[in-house]
Length: 202
Image 1 (tube, rainbow, N blue to C red):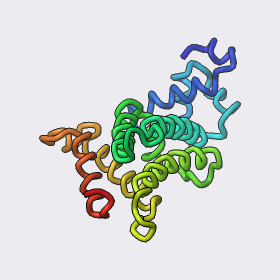
Image 2: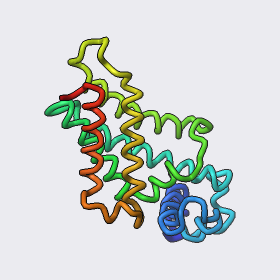
Image 3: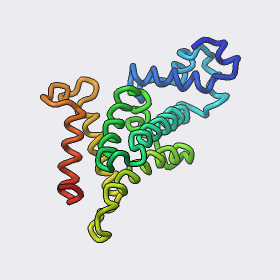
Image 4: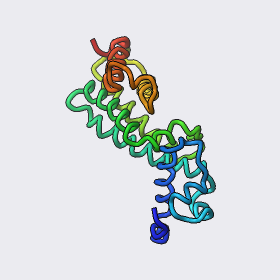
């Protein structure tokens, strides 16, 4: 992004976009703040107008990523239509779609070693994403007797972990790329097996 973007007040977002590009090229740990500045077309000192250092810039990338991620999960759930199960499975596909389409943001969120709890805005964005999965799990259990409902947050986190595992298995040239089934199929079958094991579906 050119210097005129900075002069129009867009330096903060220009640095975010530059950082996303660098993460996609080098990973979340292998770039410097000076490189982000150079990619954004500004001086090495300019980022300090908005960020105290490299980690704070990474936190902003992760925050924006979580907001987009949460919005995708919420849209995929679509208030549980046409059924809670189909909506929940769509959320899994939205997870994989985000990881594939926004790898720089995804790596900042999950592979940069950030302390999410140490940044209130970042924590709130991450919690919004988790809350979407929890709502999906709650909808699945709504028709079960209260004493048979597993904890929704447990189920949300198990499915989150399963989704993340599929991304890791299939992503960036890893062995899953040679699997006879697709990432989508692996995630859906894994979620269905898990839900049957809980007695949520037959």
